[in-house]
Image 1: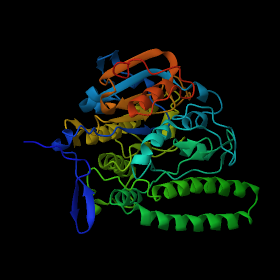
Image 2: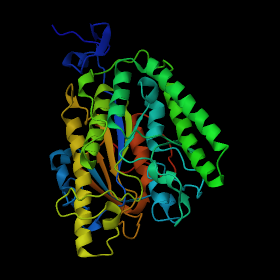
Image 3: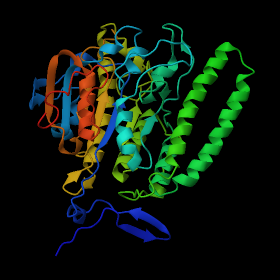
Image 4: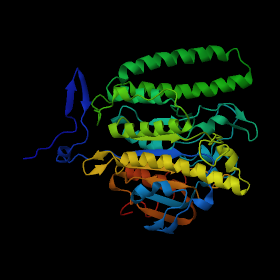
Amino acid sequence: MKTGLSRRVMLRGAGVGLGLPWLEAMAATGAKPPVRMAALYMPNGVNVDHWTPKGTGRDFELSKTLSPLAAVKDKLVVMSNLWNANSIGGDGHYVKEAAILTCVTIKKTPGADIGNGVSVDQMAARKSGIETPLPSLELGVTPVAIGVDAVVGYTRVYGSHIAWSDATTPLAREINPRSAYERLFRAASGQSDIAGKMDTLLLDRVLGDANRLRGQLGTADKIRVDEYMSLMRALEQRVQRASAGTQRTWKARVPMDSKAIPPEKPADHAEHVRLMMDMIATAFQTDTTRVATFMFGNAVSNVSFRFLEGVSAGHHDVSHHAKEADKLRQYQLVNQWHVAQYAYLLERLAGMREGESTVLDNSMVLFASALSDGNSHNPHKLPLLLGGRGGGRIDSGQHLVYSEDSPLANLYVSMLDAFGAPVERFADSTGPLAGLLKGG
């Protein structure tokens, strides 16, 4: 006779409790796996001639750039003709890219008085963050850019963040794979209280040193220090929250292997990105967090892609193709490589079983760029993909084509609904995105 098994059953050994993976016996209790949300951001737009699938609805054929997604096509939604109206104007990149998850118009400033909005990931984190050790996980591969882009008059901080907890607080990203894994491991093994106290002491010293240094600097350098301090304060608040003991009843869904720690310095850009995809997969499988964001690069990223056969230039350089055939060819190859990394994450999540479903079935993973054609900095017809079934709420396996210039914010209204954090409105939304949710 089968009996139900609680999600809180623990394996105990050597004084350490670790959560069991999802077992069939747990289904008898009626417990449902949690829904997760991730957003992956690619800078510099796409070669539009090779992005959009042929066909609509369920009868669609993946384009050349989207071909790496063939194995997960039935768990994918491609969305066409959405845009972020509040990102129009301003400059070529920052106004669009800083607002990809907020859908507002950022404040034009060269200094620390930045202004944006709350990003959709953080709206979700407000709902799920009280149930997990980490409210959310912000990852990247490129250090924060500071100072002013003199060409357009915006602080470069805007181009380094897509996750914002409020209008003036961009969230600090982890770019070191080893540090990211150690943070997840501490949280999953119940060590976050001690680590949080140590991190708080370190941050206190950093902020104290920065305050003392500020008094010795000129105006321009003070602005740079203020930018840095605003990011550190945001990190400080998150460390305090994580170590406050609010998740003492939480248990990891699967144990993390302390010996699987990644290198501190990846061999190259490709390895660095893959390691960060693994961090998201690990975080979601263990339920250490249910919300994550990842930036493949900062705005105006010019990472060299010479490691790809047939590519001889940087990312931003090829995005400014001026309709030259060879640059367009290279641009497409760079786009396809990014999609392949997205596909890697989706396939990893698809391989993680949770009863009759998988972690991918219980996730929503967005892939987005804030531009369509990078050469013209065009914000129309944004390249947008949504992987996963959102716990059964997402009607996947479709190419949804909307009327031109439909609000991107409508997508976020639907995602928040599927996540269990419904809102009546997000930024300039006009309602949920038609056809995305089952029964919607």
